[in-house]
Amino acid sequence: MDVFEALSTAANIMLLGMVCVFAFLGLLVIVINTIAKYCPEEAKAAPAKQNNVNDQVSPDVVAAISAAVHKYRKSRD
Amino acid sequence: MEGLLKLWNDTGLANFEVGQVVMMAVGALLLYLAIVRGYEPLLLLPIGFGCVLANIPMAGFTDEGGMLWYVYHVGIETGVFPLLIFMGVGAMTDFGALIANPKMLFLGASAQFGIFATLFGAIALNLVPGFEFSLADASAIAIIGGADGPTAIFLASKLAPELLGAIAVAAYSYMALVPIIQPPIMKALTSVKEREIVMEQLRPVSKKEKVFFPLAVLFATVLFLPAATPLVGMFCLGNLMRECGVVDRLSSTAQNELINIVTIFLGLAVGSKLSAEKFLTIETIGILLLGAVAFSIGTASGVMMAKVMGRFSKTPINPLVGAAGVSAVPMAARVANKVGLEANPHNFLLMHAMGPNVAGVLGSAVAAGILLAIVGG
Image 1 (cartoon, each protein chain N blue to C red):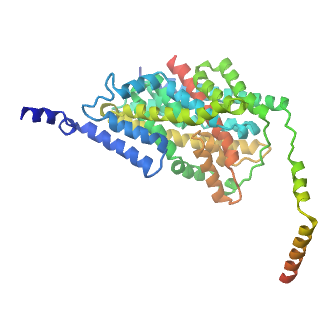
Image 2: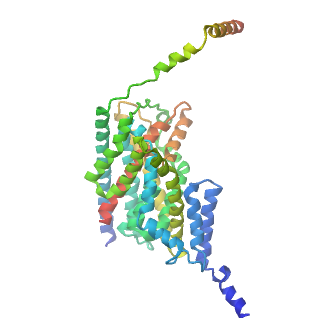
Image 3: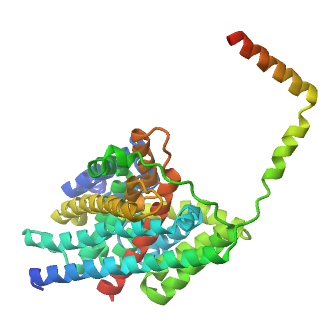
């Protein structure tokens, strides 16, 4: 095959290839968005845990820590 | 005396040819890069060793009936090894970042321009005397720009088996060189201000979406691009095994034991193709050159596309993530993250770059399917 003929074939493949890649991945964008529309987000169970942490710390400890923090802040003034 | 002479004639020293010595040096160089420099050691080590084995005089590893001959014919000529690796890669890939921000697929698509531009370049190289690449050869070389080892090996084994050794070595070497090749291009194409752009946090992705994703990708491939189904199909199988949650044992095998076993044989078989008469040619130099060009163009077009998208998008897009569109998972994403951190130490782009990064894997598989359909069919 003549080199220039081959070059024009290559240019054709380049154009066709890029159009196909974009078209196909563009289609996937639509597909993913469609899936996302019909898949509601899972309910989150996370916030309940944070309360537990507070409960486990006894009031005495909280008092002791806040007293210490208070004292520390005062000492820095 | 006669016995001694016969023994001497059976030694390696008496039978070495210059080409074999040079190829052993190439094998040693690959071993050095793998062991000392840590460049893609999982593949360059078996490839380098395979290269040494294949060039031992009188040993006959690569002759018909030799071990490496069998490994090559069973695994690579049939396309089985790269496909098994692709399944493992699928099982290791989390598509969450892509599902959360699907328009990143366009970055993965534009980075494939490196492949098609190189195809043109390889044909243009025919104008230089000494080069004679057919369209099939050029396609196999161009896929190096996809920065995806298994895809490159798969396509080369189908379109240009005689160039496979050089193509595989180029593909894996450049993947290892991503942290060196990409940053200068990324910095040249973006301003500091652009590199500082902070992207919005990604939304959480539900398990259902992750399970449907590989099935939907496979379905779309079946409908529109059956030539890509070997690669995409195995990739989706691996990913479905990972996400569905009921076959953890299979998923763990695919991403650990199986991929490791196959990697050993794949590396050896690729190394066995590094024989002097096939590797020490002017074509190899052309392939190495074109591979670097392919990589650079892919990186540049990904960044440029990200800049264009950033202009029209409602949410900010940092152009650096575009460079991750040339698969090379997860190295390219890490590079984007690192360059981003240099501009703004509080800006972590890793998760955002993973989107285009895995999109690049899909993109190069799709590009390989298109090349197979046009050139191979």
